[in-house]
Image (cartoon, rainbow, N blue to C red; front, side, top):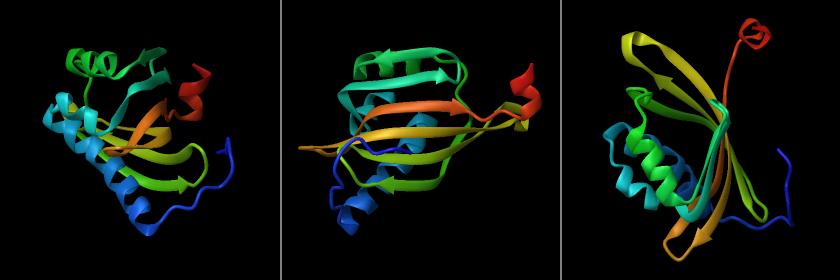
Length: 139
């Protein structure tokens, strides 16, 4: 994880807010509360799924439409291994574990850029990469 700018000081409250933001994402997706993604993303956010399925969505409205139209949501999203890196922008590295239908389990890596807004911390860019075994990578 590289840093784009000078180190910014984050308070413990900032760090807690950022951890809660990352956790809230999974709860909202699992509940189908896509209209509440305004609590997660900036209006001009980018959701880059090129490391997952090759797609990329720009703007909060496009992200919400994608979420509403997706038939591939796991039953449960779990965020873990959250690493907050101060800077400008603040970067967050985390893992996502998805429990799907029939007990299928998958893992992704999220690489986020965050921005503090008047409403609190929000994700301005989310890159999602599906974790694959070496055998899957070779196929």
